[in-house]
Length: 247
Image 1 (tube, rainbow, N blue to C red):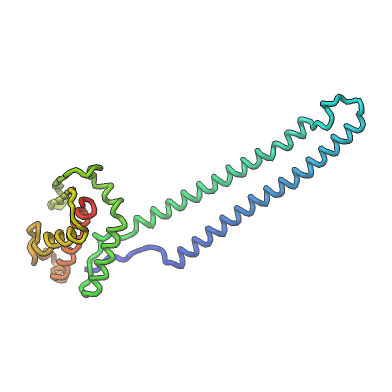
Image 2: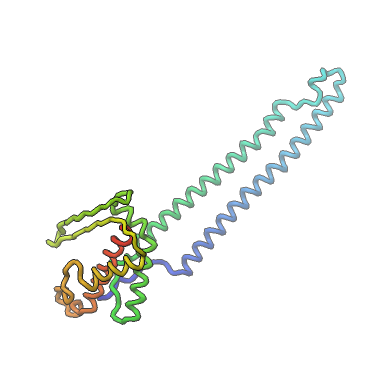
């Protein structure tokens, strides 16, 4: 059985896109900061001019009331306060850019994740060393996705004893059996793993024929290694649903 080809971008392509995104982000950052510096320089010029005007007016009016000496006009005050409004507008624009970039990144990651092949869509090869490598890869995937998968299985949040069997009829006339079992045991991780391995593999816990073959017109798919490949996945699936969620 030939495994479907994985379709996703190459590492150089992803690196190039990431570098391009960082360059654009740095360019936007420099542009915003340059605008802020220019506004501050202009504000210094305006304040110095306002101060000179106020000093000249005060020196020309010696009889002015004491409380009005050196006071800035409301127009000058408004001119000074408009800088805060400009900074707020710049921050709002920068936040909008970040929202757009995050949305674009989310869509890209969703497309990438939906195109990944799951363990159930991959058959282990016939070569023993390659089978071991494949088994290690599948086990690693199960480990890192344990929390997400368990969250969708509907197990009780508490550690109470739970057992459930559901049988669903498929369109092709077959049936899908979903078994959920949760319980707490006071044993080591290695001991529990060994016992489940003995039950599902050595003793054939659910009673499947060890030499069961697939009924198909293609003789290559009836090879025992392919059947064992399916059974290895079946063991991993049950092992995952029981060990990672129930112990």
